[in-house]
Image 1 (tube, rainbow, N blue to C red):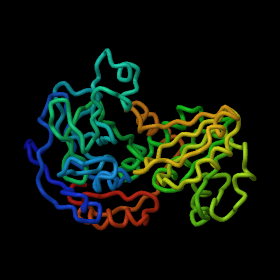
Image 2 (tube, rainbow, N blue to C red; image 1 turned 30 degrees about the vertical axis):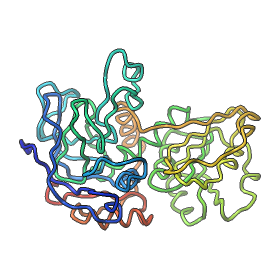
Image 3 (cartoon, rainbow, N blue to C red; image 1 turned 90 degrees about the vertical axis):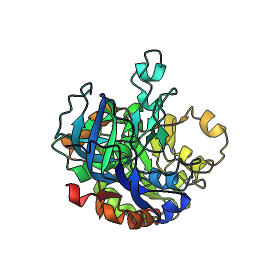
Image 4 (cartoon, one colour; image 1 turned 30 degrees about the horizontal axis):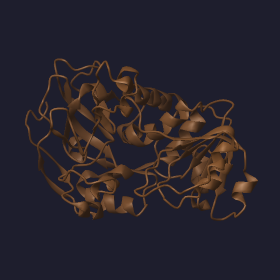
Length: 361
């Protein structure tokens, strides 16, 4: 059964030092229960780069105390009488980076299925506020509670540790691929082969793209990228002529890196006329400047993409089952969250860490 209480426990960031492994395990008060909610007994929670940015207030002042984690999988232990999605107690379910939106009929984004772009009341799974003013808390803990509309049933064909990182990291790259026509007849580049980029390579391959090119600074991850499904690999620090050699070769580039020093102008050289460059990595600083003719001369477009709506997540998970897409992950005990955060910040994950609540499995 559910906690039936208004006190959960989790690893809390109390100030920016939380990103350095100073999280404190303590109680917090979840949102007030509503009959449209689902309560999840957490078994797994992926560690996302967003967690570190938030813990250190890198994207703006964080609402401390903060429990991060928005790649949550567990068991539904309490289901409201007005909950949606056919969720039943005992179901294996998950929630990604978003847990609510305004859902109003006059909201252009929500009424057209683009809830992840709601401008009137988007609630993040942590470090955010619900419409009633309650704070949202994430998955580095024992339970999670929130609106059923954003709770996803996990398919039987995916283990919890594989599914959890897909709920944010996976859909963050899947969405821009499908939204920009990735599939047969298209040649796609993925910049950055890390927690996000490895999903980009695998989903581009699963979608049937003619060619998938992995782009990284060095060749250290080349072998892994080829195993993930990349057809070619570009190491930008090791070949000074990489942009010239590969110019006008790609229809779509999805950039997962968050460095303000990325060679953006040279990435744009790789695009064919009318190609698209989509940024999903979110630097804490500005992206590099570039000459407008990099866009004008070939009619290319530059844009961004944010996570994905619940139906997009369901679609992605179904494709992962069908095409046998598996997260490359390492399990870490939830009780060792601090060390896992430190290791994540050092770039040691290959390619996602998943916190496991061993006592709750």
